[in-house]
Length: 274
Image 1 (cartoon, helix red, strand yellow):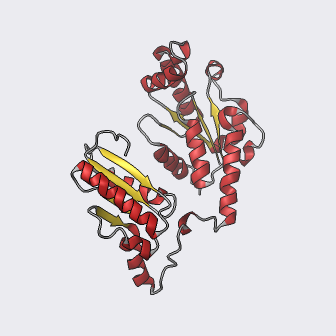
Image 2 (cartoon, one colour; image 1 turned 90 degrees about the horizontal axis):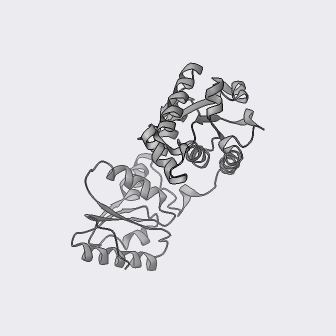
Image 3 (cartoon, one colour; image 1 turned 90 degrees about the vertical axis):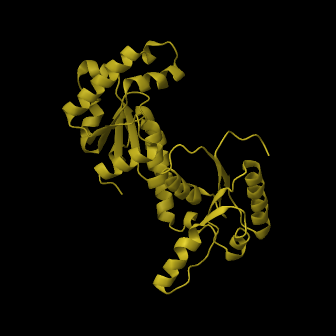
């Protein structure tokens, strides 16, 4: 097994699919515990008893190395496969056993126990909307195109490197939201006005800002020792951008201490997007 970074506990996410559901749920729970260093390992596509036994061996081996039992988040649907994990020397949190079985009792019907159901494109319309949203966001990244902005669900504005692009793509990939983004640049601040094309879509605008010192760090990685990355310039641009957003009545937030998920959730809530 390759060298692992120092950690207090090892956490495994075992799934018959991608492991995204197990990892997302696990992160939500583990985030409540501060100061614990975790070694996180995803074991996706564990979709046969043989692969389950391989996963058990790896988990057991890691427990022996750590000297403390690992924590396992499992979203294995097939009961036969899931049984392979039951006697592991690990703390196993089985999401389906804990949540699906009570729902079966409540509804009075058996669930499908179909592998990968939560990630299949059963709703082709919804899947197609996500693809279209991704293409739209890529085509309208950083003000590349003004064509079709009337189709945007939201247009993010803010200074360069404040988080507009990753937020746009997250909204598209996770929620099927057509998100464009437009940079606010020194020329806009000199004029004291937004780019003219944005005034026709004012109701769709949402602003992102960032602490100047954090912006300087991000820009320094891109263009070290440049005026673009200097703290003085970053302070001036952020101050001018926030003043403009207040003046134009644009709702905005600071991305400094927020995750992409938190920013996206705020945008969805503020603009009442679905």
